[in-house]
Image (tube, one colour):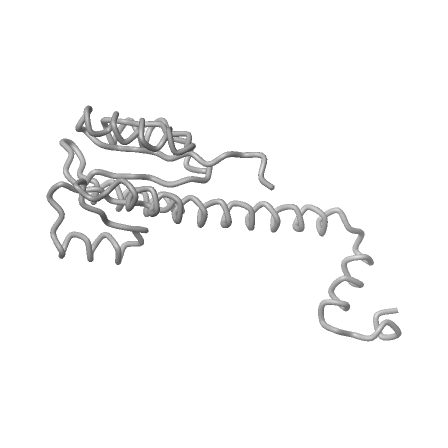
Length: 165
């Protein structure tokens, strides 16, 4: 089990809506951090921590779609859920093609948002755990002597013990 807990990031310029969603998700057991400004979010968030990002589509200074492009450029692997009061089919298709996890209307039932968050957080935690496992194995391999590495490679290739020896 992981030592780190997931973080749900909520980026929306509508203060009342953002606060209500933060309260709802917190009551469902998630740790939530919120931003009204996408630029501040980019400056302040630790995107290495697993979880997900919930983005409003229409915000001043930078739209959710523009923020998604910036996150992709930063190689951010966190799942993105779009929430929009003004969602259009084309917008949803573009967001999903660029890797968004989900695209919901702000008027959607809270259970739909909760299901989308659960799915996104689960995927993020699995990727995080997998990355940690690979890093641990890499450290173990790096600690081996050159001869031990030869043996490991021989075993991985399926060579017989007498051939490896």
